[in-house]
Length: 417
Ligand code: PLP
Image (cartoon, rainbow, N blue to C red; front, side, top):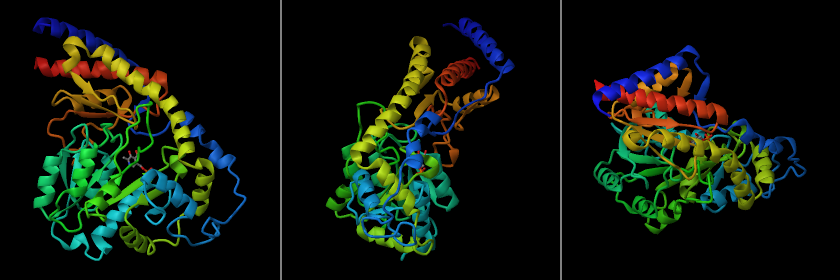
C-alpha cells in the first residue's frame, strides 16, 4: 500500500472502531483462570469424595494438628509431578505463590545467612515472565534484572555471565514448562547449564515454578528435564527449589500446592514454616489424593481440560492468522503454545500500551501491556499477553476481532506519523 491507500484503509478501520465505541463490550481476557466448564471437571472433588479413613498413610489423624510436611500419600503423589522422593517433597496449602513468597521471605530475613544483611539483593528475571513473580520481588526490595527468553528458556550466555560475576545476584525465577506468557519450555541444554553454572553468590537459588507441568493442549507434550537431578549431578543439590500446585488441575480456590527440593533445603524451609503454622489443610490434601489418585488419573483429567482449552487457543491463532498475513504480517507476531494458559503477542515497537488502552476503551480488558517485564518496564513497548481460558468462545471471537482492529489501527497510525 502507498501512503494514500494506507490513509484510506486507516479511515475504514477507524469507522469500524467507532462502531465498537458506540456499543462497548464487557469482556475480559486479562488473567489466566480456568473457565466454569473446567471447574465443573472437579466438582466431584468436593461433592463426591468421601473420606472414610481419617488417618494418613503415615498414621496422622488428618482432622487434627500435625504433619507440617503434608500427609505421606500427598507427598508421594506430588513427587510424581516434581520427580522427587517423599523426603524431598513438602505439601502445603492452596497456593504455590504463597510458598514462593514464604521461601523468599525466609531467604531474605530468617535464613542462617540472610540476604537482607547485604546492601543490594538482585534476581535474574527471564522476560517476558509472570508479573506476580515480579510483584513479589519488588515488594521484598529485590532488584530485578531482566534477561531475554530465547524460545528455549533464558539466554544462558547472559545468565552465566551475570551470575558468575555479581555476588549480589542471589537467584532467579523460571517457569520451565509452557512459560507464562511465552509458552516456551526450557531445553535440556538450558537445564544442564543452569545446574552447572558457576555462581559468585554461594547461596544462589533457582525458584523453578512448574505451574504448567501437565498442562498440555495437545498430544505434543513438552517436558523440562529433571532439574533437581541435574543440580545433584553438578554438585549443586541445594540450588533449586521447585513448585507446583493443583490450581489449574482441580479448583484454584481450593487446591493444594507443593515444594520439591533437596532434603537439606526442605528441612530449612520446614523449620521456617513451623514458626508460621502447625500444619496445612490435611483434609484437602487427602481429598486431592482420593480424587487425583495417581499420575495417570491426573493426565486423564488434564486431557479433559485440554479439550475445553484447545479450541480457544485455536480460535486465537486462526483469527490472528486470517488478519495478519501478507503485507500486514509485520504488524504482530504471536506464540502458538503447546500448553499453558497464554498467548504472547509481540507488536511493533511503541504500540503495545496504546493497543491495550484502545481495547479498554471499548470494554475489553487485557493484561496491562508490558506487565510481563520487571517493574512493567519494557523500553520497546511491544508486549501483550492474552489469556483466552476464561472467556466463552463467542466472546473470545469478538475480543480477537476487535483486537485485530486495534492492532491494525494503532500500527498504521504509528507508520503514518
Ligand atoms: N505460577 C505461575 C507461572 C502462574 O501462571 C500462576 C497462575 O497463573 C501461578 C503460579 C499461581 O499458582 P497458585 O495458584 O498455586 O498460587
